[in-house]
Each structure stands twice: as structure tokens, then as C-alpha cells.
Image (tube, rainbow, N blue to C red; front, side, top):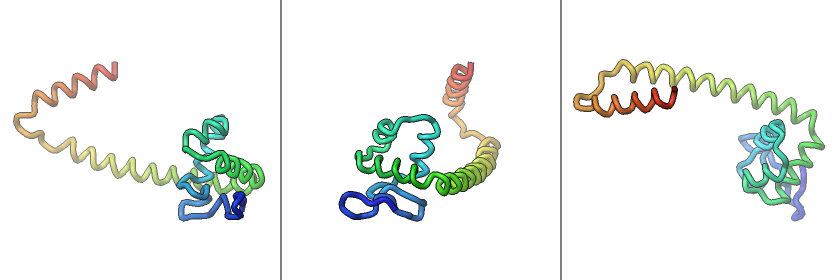
Amino acid sequence: MSLASTGQPSIIRTERGLSIAGSRITIYDVMDFLKASYPPKLIRDKFNLADEQINAAMSYISANAAQLEAEYQEVLQTREEISQYWEEKNREHFEQIATTPRKPGTEALWTKLEKQKSQRNS
């Protein structure tokens, strides 16, 4: 683990995985942005981290690159599985909503909504 100047670990393992101490930001969150070519300063600002926190994360990623890459790929796979689950779950829900009759007296609102949707899509 990387140590902060206080002697406390700056990277800790939580239920979310490896995280930056004092935040809810994971190393995998930082890696997402690094892989998208964001510079560390922008990542620091995006997550509202202190210089010490982003520096610790960057050092940890550099020192443990091979191990982290394998773990990161597992995280990506899990994210994809969760995303697919919720897409399917929501699809069923939206299909159910689509078959539900509209309340009387809301025709004008639905017409307006459909017009706005068609304008956005064109």
C-alpha cells in the first residue's frame, strides 16, 4: 500500500475495491480517465482530490501496473454484466409501461411530449 505523509495508507481496499483514502474514489475510476487520456490534474479536479491523493493514486498505479490491469479488467467485466442486467430489467419495465393505457385527459400532454421527442431526433 502507498503511505500518506501521516504514515497512514493512502490507497486502501474497501468493498468497492482499491480506493483512495479519504474518498469514495477507486483506483479503477482513476484508471478509466487515464485510459481516456485525461491528465492527472484534470482527474484530480474531476474527483475533487488533493494533490497528495492523486499523486498517491498515480504512484500506486505505476508501481502495480500488471496486477492492477488484471483487476481492472475484472471490474470492467462486472460493470458490463451489471449494465446488461439493468438494461434487461428496465426493458421489461418500459415494455410494461408502454402497454398501460394512458390516463384520460392527458392527450394534450402526450402530444406535446411526442412532438418534442421528434424534434430532438430530427
